[in-house]
Length: 313
Image (tube, rainbow, N blue to C red):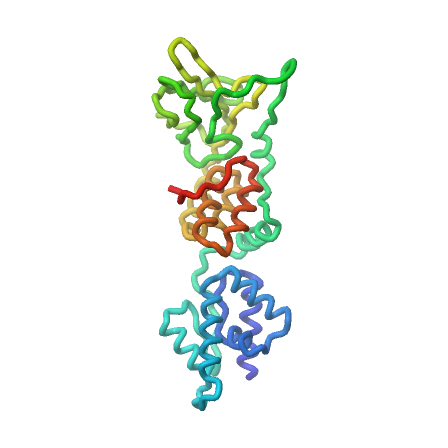
């Protein structure tokens, strides 16, 4: 019994360090049998709410225990039978009740430092956007009275960091026969320009990393040329992350490709608001249990665009 208690203690310590860990079966069995104190029980329930694997294991153990009520138990006990069944079912981790062994987590894709930040964001229901990114979102001003309504709006990238040195620019349909896109650096010098018939455009040159840029689109409609945004409307500004940040974010995107909620939080923390919105949309659509949290996190980005019902492409 002391070996089992030691295993439970080690598992709880591991869970407090990384909620992505799958607990050992000693812990789940103790939970099902009601042998944990309130804090330990809350720790397991917190993880079960975040991991469908843990929740399914608890359900399986409870079902097995109910099925064995009133049945003669073999010498190994119902818990060892449950552990064997879990291994056969392909559970990521199984720890035998009578065998002392080190509890090892599966290869969790979420690191402990990341998990702490993701958990904090989920609990608060909001992501804290970097101050430098928040500063890109100028408020609309007024010049001598009410401003003329915008004829069309620029969509992305606006008020966000981007990963690519050749970002995709998108805007509303004016409609127009053609559009000219102009990109400027912080000294208002033009760095690239292009013309297209559609409502999206990608530059054919790389924009320097670490820079902050603004951009405008001019819609050509016959003899009429309409440029947006124009004063007193705020500039459409964005920044391109530096090389070191780009490498780190690329690794995170690959590692957390199947964890959109966590990935969205980490992207937003790095200022990639547009990419974070996409991940929160994925999380809202793919997991009903965390959909409301995903919507709250999405709304905290203050982008003013509702979550769509279409899967992210």
